[in-house]
Image (tube, rainbow, N blue to C red; front, top):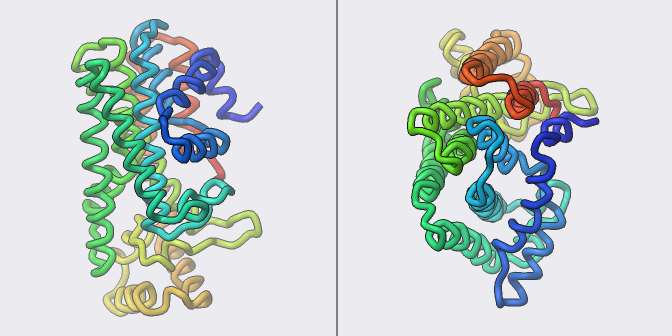
Length: 325
């Protein structure tokens, strides 16, 4: 059985009920919207974010569950889907999870408007049910995701990202939505404020570790045994490269920056950069930082009694840094 299926076991019933509830949350009187919704539901991913909501809610409440836990998960998935739709437009991407992206099938104008529709649905779902505490978590996440993306764009032009700025970017870009999932899970079952904050931090740590793992894929072998170098081609300053830049001679630093800025489409040069980063210890350093975040996340689970939900969350944390894609 795949790891994701094992993680789902304690919340299998809830995940099955969620399928229909999520579909209902996107319902509209406009036929075009419903056609797009049908396409999205058919090509759904692993649904890790609802899983975080459900597992945290169950763990902190000793197995209790509320209808608003479903609403919290639906709001997260609506917002997440909206951001993916908008990301594909920004990146001019025609594929998502092996399927055509919405902008490839319906063009940019319809995709932008559909993304806006999903955002509004998330807001209305919260407001109609007086879930203002849940709305606050998701609103913070949307703001931070936008800030993180814009900060990355600004810094990529100059290639002057420090390690602190790198962590600020990935905290906002990636980790903040996972943090919203885990905070909403605890909030939905009326956990005390301190517990909600602990779970928010737990999600943030997993999100940071998840993004670091993604950054490592650029330097590790893919299915055909070659590092991808995609981040280098896109001039993204990730942790392995930042470490290499901070721990090399001025001459090598100039060569690295010149390579990333002006020769990022040259396969031979990109390969040379990857090899340089590996030799400089950038991969080992990045791996160790990722494991630090993993350990801190697991430490936050220690205070909870053993349960199937806690076990699944531990498996989830380990899966994040051990996954192969």
